[in-house]
Length: 362
Image 1 (cartoon, rainbow, N blue to C red):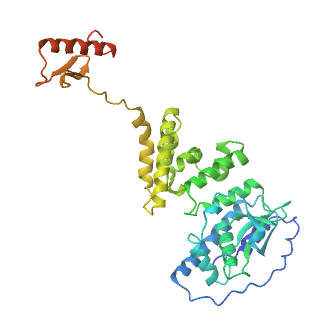
Image 2 (cartoon, rainbow, N blue to C red):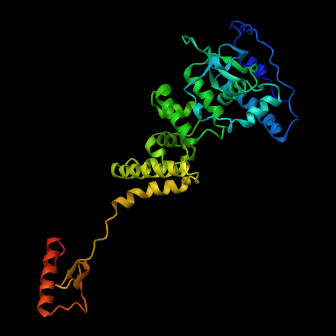
Image 3 (cartoon, rainbow, N blue to C red):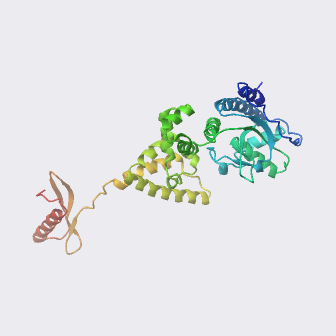
């Protein structure tokens, strides 16, 4: 049986003998949903996931135990709960489609079974709390209240956390989430590095119990500009390992100009494909074209061969190659040129090569 949240939260507070007793839980209304539909395999998976979430949230609470002062659990109106901006997950990217299984699970189980973690806010007339961990649960409950379930509540445990502890707690939960992209996490880390760790990477790595080298790569990827990210069909296509090579390439100014130009073209292609219902360009193809862009622009274009034409407009003499070993010329048959014309052609050709710095006197 999964350990109840009340048990592990009580354990967190057991060492604070001198602390005042937890506040009395605020009154809440009973939440009643229609009789649940028969349990499906998908619901069974959600229940199993709920057990995993309980175990993970237990670890989250232990992680923040140094900052937790008081904890209580409430049923809240999600409209009175805002999203903490320090979380990696982008609320705007959530949709009915990517929250469908969670929505179905909440309906089937008669309510939200896995509490979110929130903290109180001050000075905001529109909100009483903000979500630290549980953004998808907040979105799903909000959606249900707009779609035939107005009485369902957002279940949350309330904790007192400073910003750094809130970041660590949210980060630990997001590590187990496949739908939080590498780019979202990377940019979240980059912002947290400034906000909570004074730009000290070693300190941040120690607090998060992460490899400093891995964290450094994440911060590097976070610096890829939006103009380049727009080349991909979705920001979620930007994966750490390949994106790190792209971030490194952007360090060179000339290469960065070429990559930005290529990204603008790719972004237009992606937009056209979306508009016409086509398949978006694959992330691997986009990355290859971006990384190849600097090489394409810096490659020396192949010079057109010099051709001397006669009065009839036919080629008389052309330069085949120029090297340190000598110059290879071709005299064209059927040009109609006589000996004098050929001598003029040779003289003019040698003069042209000298002007180009390719003459025999190099």
